[in-house]
Picture 1: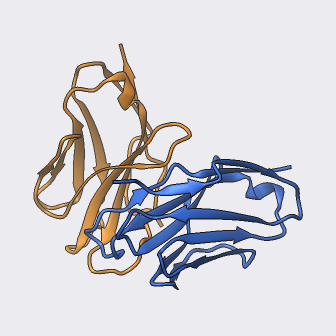
Picture 2: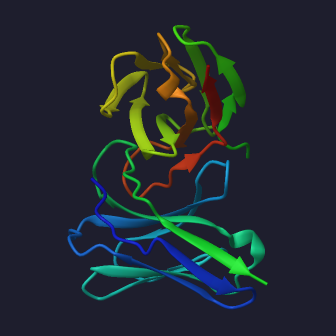
Picture 3: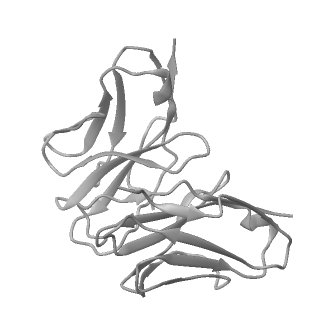
Length: 112
Length: 114
């Protein structure tokens, strides 16, 4: 069911920017892109979401390509605490229901 | 503002027993959904409740059920427990479940069936 493709794992040096890619080539015009992360044994943590425009908040930036077929989550200054599984999810706008379809995600390892 | 609260955090049950898990959503949130996470299947959607009515349901057997109360608190129940039901059960809430509104997760309830 997952409509996104992510690399299974990535490494990043502490203090550097972590750029996590996500492919959603079948995305429709009314589908949002959401990012969550899950640190071992904890519930998923919301990071950011967007529809068409790039978005930024205190945690990260979300860059969506003009054709919307892919996006990149950017953690500007990764720390060891950012080591987690990162999930990219698409969700239909206007659809009632709290259903998120999770894929396998990307394991991000931040190394000192 | 308090987050999504789930109880109990950890529990151990025996095969054949039943279990009830509780979830208190963020204040003002009326949509509550449940997910199961296992190493083999990952995160899977169980069901979602809004205004005390089940609005969406995942592909799980009838042993998995839930309900929502008038204060938006929710419970899920698993009857006739099987070893394969051992998992992290996650509750999530949002204001009304409309896409574009953020969904927040609790820390989960770890269920071990022996």
